[in-house]
View (cartoon, rainbow, N blue to C red):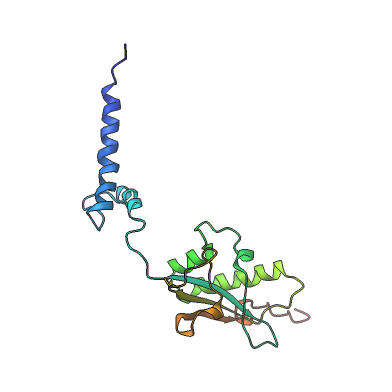
Length: 187
């Protein structure tokens, strides 16, 4: 003989269905915006159903490039070395931050560039320090006629047409890493 289910258990299941599952189903199927009247914490929980509400036409990629003394060309740095974790699929933490910052130059990109220069110096103490650094962004659009043959990857900076490339910020090393002035003797 089975024991009856307590009414508190039934209430918990009904509450779960009403408070989470119904908003998720509504948001995912018929309601394009957050449901009115829901508390913000519940709205955030129900938005998980809407991660892919539209098909993007293209995607963006971010680049770190440096220029060494005596060289005219910019060299793209390997982001896997600077940002080894890729918690967002093929996107690094830098990609996530620049996306959130809307790829605009400012104090945050300056701090990021400063950190990159310092990290690069730690990883490559034998290499000459770069004289300049820049952060760049490109836009790629898939070509249905030529799909990738071995999985998707970020294109090289030079592979992207110039009209789909943009330099977000460019800094000279001297403006990012200001060396403290040597103290005068006798002071």
